[in-house]
Length: 430
Image (cartoon, rainbow, N blue to C red; front, top):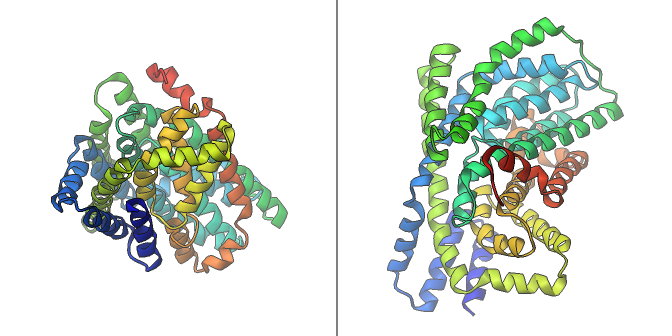
């Protein structure tokens, strides 16, 4: 009965339009009161969930991404991407994919990625004669690669939601190859649609211009290499790497590029504080939720239910993907990770999936949810920049969905995409 109350109140609050964080917290409170447990349990669980040293990485990574967004780094990355692939059919679309991938690497946030790249690329593509729905779909889908990059704070959230079963450093290394796969799948989709619609190719500016734009963008792109090399060499921990990222970004935007202004710095700090507050609130209330799910053995119940459907690992992985996709359509990325990881990670591990590989599966699924109504944050931002309705974009979204799903299937059923680099670089034994 307690489990029914927990689930019914949670989904009931969501249907009523209550924000996800409050829906999680209120459903947990209702269940605790029904159970007759002391109300102090609520605050104890919230504080224990947020009072973790590793969470220091979250505000630093968020702040680093906002500094990159407001510090003018995007323009140099766009120019590099345009010079590299702008001469291919549908050149600006291809440039958009590469630019979003590169900026996702330095920002670690799909929302920051679509905000920065969308503001530059969508108006540029419309001016060059590309359809608005194409420009928005390319930008919003390619920006999702930010969730898999070393600067992604969602990796930190997953590592802690996994209860210490996975190394943050291994996750950071694991995300690189899936991010590359996702970029390639998006390039194929963007090219296929460009050919179908007869979009033109641009002109190759020459290798001298490519190298010039690469030199201009390199200081911004170096942040990925600094984080990886620092962690792998043992100079700093994964948590400390976030502070290093902020320090480097401040030096880069203020003293190297000299594109950061005081108003933009304050705007970046304000947005980082707001985002961190939302994430920590989600973590606190989700800890209550996880406590109750552990108390009522939800993971065991879900595992038994799935085993009745099929005992084949490939089918169990497919079911997990479908469930995560459905949940991601109306839940925020952080909330989905925090709630679903304790449920599905034990099931996936029992079926033979490594927790690092499951982390990549989780992140791609949650990223897909960011581009799916009714809670598609990146899609809403892209549509607002492009001045087009969500319905118009959804009518031509299938090729881009197919690219994302193809990348998800590669990561789900080919463990090497997630585990090869952690094993090579870190000696990961999983």
